[in-house]
Image (tube, rainbow, N blue to C red; front, top):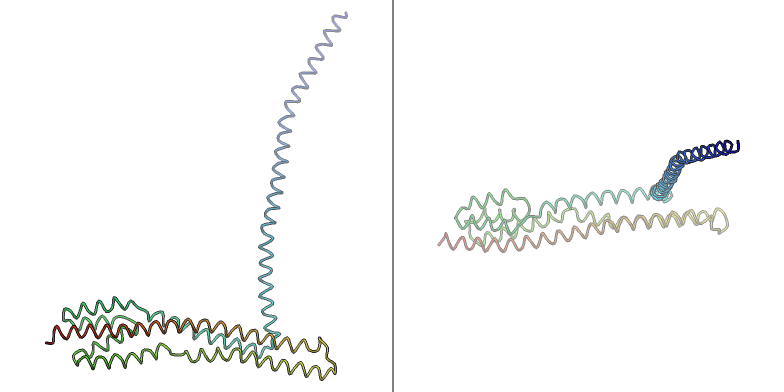
Length: 278
C-alpha cells in the first residue's frame, strides 16, 4: 500500500513539474512580447520627445520672426506715419532707380575684345559692310561707338576720331542717367529723419509745457518719435548709398572699356587705310 501511495505521489509530482515547465515555456514568449512592447513604447516616447525638442526651436524661431516683423510695423507706426511714409517713399523710388541702372549697365557690358577682333577680321578682308553689321547687331555703348566710327571710315582718321570722341561723351552721359536722382534720395532720407527728430523734440517740449512737469512719461513719447524717424532715415540712406557706389563702379568700368575700345578701333582703322587706301 505504501508502495502504491509512493508511486501515486511520485507521478503527481512529475505531472506537476511537467505542467510548471510547460507554463514557464509558454510564459517566456509572452514576457518577451511584453518587454518588446514596453521597449517599443519607450522608443516611441523618446522619438516624440526628440521631435518636440526639434520642433521647439523652429517654433521659437518662427515666433521670433513674427515678433520682429510685428515690432517693425509697430515702430513704423510709432515713428509718426507722416514722416515714416515719406522715408519709405524715398527708399522705394531710390531702390527703383538703382535697380533700373543696374539692369541697364549689366546689359551694356559685352566682350569688347571679341567685338574688336571680329571687326578687325572683317576689315582685313576689306569688308566694311560686314564690320558695320557686326557693330549694329551688338548691344552696348562700345558697339555703338564702333558703329559710328565705321560710318565715317572713308572720311579719314581724324574725322573718325572726332566722331568716336563725341559719341563716346553721349554714351557716357547715358550711363550716368538718373544718378543725380539717386543722390537726391540718399540726401533726403536722413534729412526727413532729422526733420522728424526736430518735430519730435518740439512735441516733447509741448507736452512738458502742458503737463507743467518734466517727467519721463511726458518726454518719452516725443523722444521716441524723434529717435525712430532718425534711425529709419539713416538706414534707408545707407542702403541706397551701397547701391549707388556699386552703380558708380560699373559706370567707371564701362567708361574705361569705351576709351580702350576707341583707341583699339582707331588702330584697326589705320591699318585698314594703310592696306587698302595706298
